[in-house]
Image 1 (cartoon, helix red, strand yellow):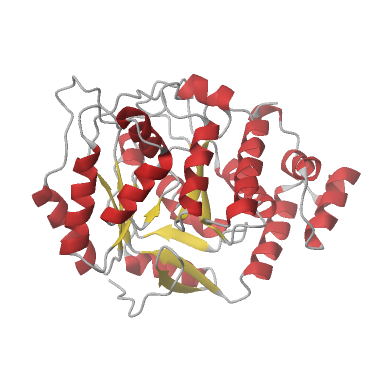
Image 2 (cartoon, rainbow, N blue to C red):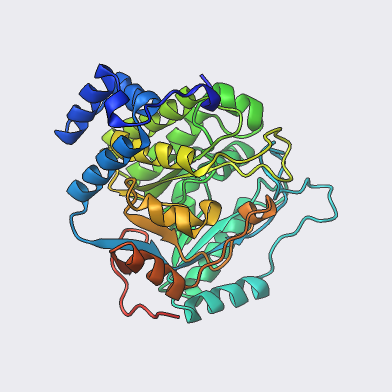
Length: 375
C-alpha cells in the first residue's frame, strides 16, 4: 500500500467498525496492537486521529505548556563514505567541497549559541574515513573544559556503529569512551526508516535497522538518554512506518531511555531519490498522531517546524505533539535539500501562545530553563 492508496474516512460517520473499536481502545487508555494501529493509520479520519492523539497528549501532559530546547546543530564535517541517496548534504572524501570544522569556528558558534540563551549543541557529521576516534574524544574534552555547563547532544547511532567497525571496538566501548570525554546524550539521527529492506535501497552503506536499535539500547544501558526520529515519505510504504514505530516501542519497553520521538517528512530537492515533492501536511499530521498513539511509553512527541513550517508545526500541537522541537539557531542538512525555515525565540513563543499554550524552554531531559529570554 502506498500513500496514494490510502482510503481514510472523510469523517467519523464513514469509519469502519475496526476503526471505531481501535478508537475506543485508545480513548480508554489501552495499548494499541499492530492491528489497531493499522486500522487507525489506514482508515481513521484525520479529525478522529487528532481527537485521539490530543486526548492522549493531555493524559500524559495535562498542564497547558509546550516545551522547546535552545540549541544549535553544528555539522563538524560533511565528508562521508555512506553516499545515502536521500542526503543532499554530504560530500565524498575526494570532493573539493568537503570540510572539517576548525576549533575557532566551533568556538564562535558555541559562544553565539550561549549568548542567544541556548543550552545545548547538537553535533553530527558524516562517516569520515580519516578521522581517528581520538579526534572526537579530544573535541569533546575541549568542549567540556571550555563550556562546562553546555549539554553536548552528539553523534548518531550510525556514526557510533561506524566507529565501532572501523576501530575494532565494541559499541559499548565506543559509547563509554565518548561519555568519559564529555558526551551527554545521543540524538536519534540516521534512523530514516527502521526497516532493512528500505534501508538497503536508500542507505545501503549505513548501519542496519537492528544495529541502529542496538546502539540506542546499549547507550540506554549505560544510563544515557537519547531521542528517536523518523524520516518518511521517500521509498518506504506506510506499513514500514508502522514497523519503525513498533521497533522503537519495543526497545523503549526494555530501556525507557528515549526522551522524545521526532518524525519529519523527506525533502527531495538535490537528492538522488526520485520523489517529486515531499508529503503534504495531512500525511505528516496523520503519521504524527499515530506516533503519539503507538508510542505510549515515550513521554514527548516533537513537531517539526524546520521541515513543515511554523503553521503546520503549530497545528501539530493538536495532533499529539507537546514539544516544539528546537530553537535551531543553525541547521544545514535539511537546508541542503532546499528547505529553510527560521524562527527566533520570540516567534516560537508567539506561535505557541497563539495556540493557547505557555512556552517553556527546556533541557534535553525536559528540565525547564529559567530565565527564558524572549529575543
